[in-house]
Length: 79
Image (cartoon, rainbow, N blue to C red; front, side, top):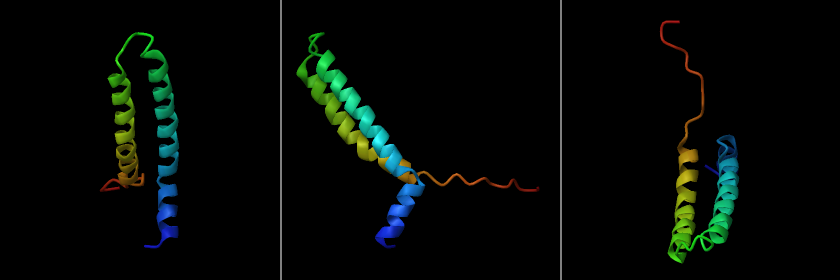
């Protein structure tokens, strides 16, 4: 499989859209935690945990979107 086919398949499965959406939400959550947690005297380790959890979740979310099968309508048996 060449690179053009791989990128076409990623686009067809909306992996790019999922990656951008995850990035936007992750950025928002990181901004929120870094601004709000110190106000409530939540330790810096909690902020660190949120950032690491979001970083670890990114490839998991993208691989889940990549594994998603195409949504083809199946014809029921007997029709």
